Length: 438
Image 1 (tube, rainbow, N blue to C red):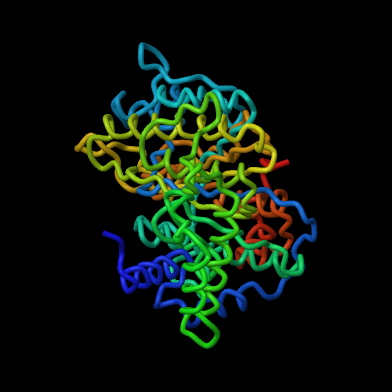
Image 2 (image 1 turned 60 degrees about the vertical axis):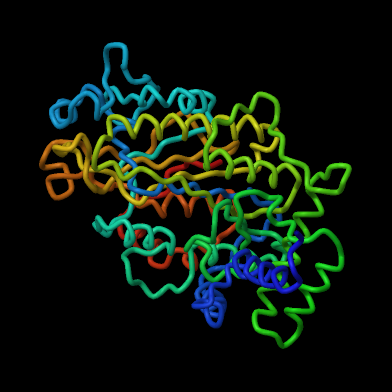
């Protein structure tokens, strides 16, 4: 039985609100705050071209020491059983890589072979001992700090860092972001895009096709006409959705055709795979994305890390390799960063796991990344070198990596508007630009 008119309108209303990022609690004032937050500072770069920026968030606190570890460091070896660290010998030995961050034998987890392929191909770089500088071990506080681009939780910014970036570039380029500049390949819009009313979200691109003809489009535009609540959000969301849907290939009956990845793109099953395929499709049809967000959870490994971590690393590695193969002809215009809210403690706990720590590994992936290198400053793992005597110390503020990507790959010269206080910190001797992006 077909949906009633009332059911159709209610469903579309919910979809428009979700796709527009217009949560009831933010709709009345967040856009204004975002525009205010983006004012000031030097003008953003004026170049017209810009990479599609992708932020992949590994939620839960990814253990960077288990992904990329110094297998010959006695402090590392003494702190964990073999199942919770990368080892240098035997059938489960880690994957050796070329690096010069420290005179140690850093190796990748054995399940990260696809990442090693990308690394050896100079498409992937690591930043070790990277993270936030607040010292919090709270998932929610740390994620909020990262997504709002702050120094500590509770800062004054009422917008996400990607929102401030997009508004700064739009202002500098005279309103040339296009109809569909931001997309979250997930259910809902992350806090990094808080306050950006033109952000769409969805696990699949075809989910944006809420209509089958002009009658439905007219009905929605009439519902959210001039003077109606959420008129601005609905209007921009509908325009963005129409822009994307027009570009999607269709079957003979007019329905949106299922996405077929490029040859050799062997995506595994799973939510991350689905999200990355959606982004690959939008990139390849020329949807005009400036920024995109993806989530991949399951990294909070307090228990049974020896089983859970390899499974997660395997899926992440295979998905990223498949994505790069899928968009191989577009790699020169895509820049991705992979970030987690924090790492894990050096010393294992008694439940075959590791607890919340500080420093971790960040990744940069793309055709304009100076890959095949591990960036950052290695602080060491001796007790006196650890943060609070327990955690890998943070030597690179994660915002330094993000700021470099914005400046070099997205034409944004107004870093002060995006990351308040960051430039003051670097001038005072904090983390300097690393030269990751071309």
